[in-house]
Image (cartoon, rainbow, N blue to C red; front, top):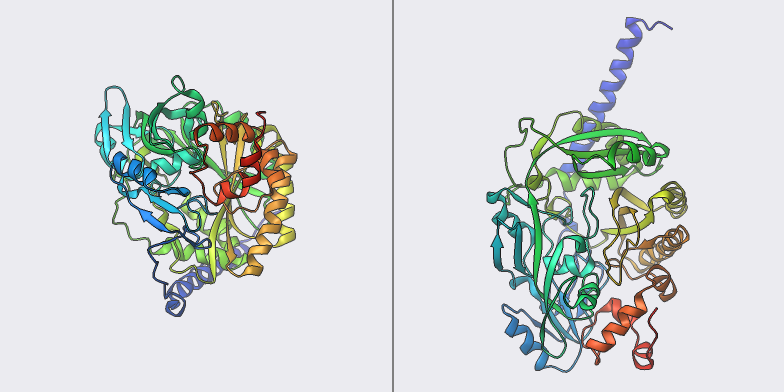
Length: 497
């Protein structure tokens, strides 16, 4: 069929009008005055809350250590339970416990040693990844495994056994050479895969339940230039695409694929590949003073309606990904969560969930996920697919085999009714993951039942047995362990798996 010039002009006018209208709507949305909603509530000293602002916890005292001796003193001069917090990005009370002592580790943040020749660095646990990047980038070195954002503390990252978008990698435990810990009796112990290995595999991913991580020695890798490659496809095509074009390509440094809500039928694969091409971004790291003006507003726009989600999928991102991007690995690893942070979280807030399923169960789980989100009308902004190799031995491993991670970013209201609605679909999602031989991630809202927790983490009782041995008085706790390491369980004992 031939298309006349008249029809081509007509289609061009429609496309241009749609794009122009979209831009006008976004600009108008961006200029709206939200000041009436933006009056923030001053944070009280003894109220510990996380980034979602959904979990305020009043502790009895906050200690801000700057030395190992400060930590030992805090332990020896108190008798109650102790919680540990860093960047406060865990989102369900994993960093605090009512009416007990809280260790705020953010000032315990020094470089202990750095050897560019050996490609390793030893740091105090309260240091943030970005501070490490500032030190290692001049030596053309990069962090081997970390989250996508650089604001997190090292201790917090180790406690939840994080992962990122790194191909051929997985949980951060795969890059940790050794740890130094302060235990409940004040002893300082070193743990590694070869020394005190039981302690090492309990502490990484142990959510502050065994002791205080005070130092970590981490493996580093060379910094390289990376170029962005994208591919848009139906979700049914992704697993085969990944197996054929991504998994065994050693040149790929970062990879993720975004599933577009609200239909969950298409994905955009994004890989960053080693390259010798000229840089399109000359900064080696994202400048610390970057002003994030449009990113939070774009997030609000997408969250505001299905039209915003359509615009993101069919207008914004096609334009964004149409241009070439070549930058340093460290630049791509230095994102700040400030680019996502709304001005206010009083009436609604942005939250994460994450689920892990064996790679061969990708299609089954993605179908179940879409059905649950549609049924409950969950306001999902994005589902990011990551790949991870198996954990090397953590007792609370979320990757006992090769898995895909489904990282769900969504908006929810802050009312009690909203929270109950999230609890309902969250439990359905956990059941869906478990039914596919997978698990759910523990740093988020504590909606899982104990039955779901033990089904997803079959070595939990081995972890609890270790805790009872090295923390016999249950000094180290938080909302997560208050839920699952109950007084009855603690008192009666249990069997190793």
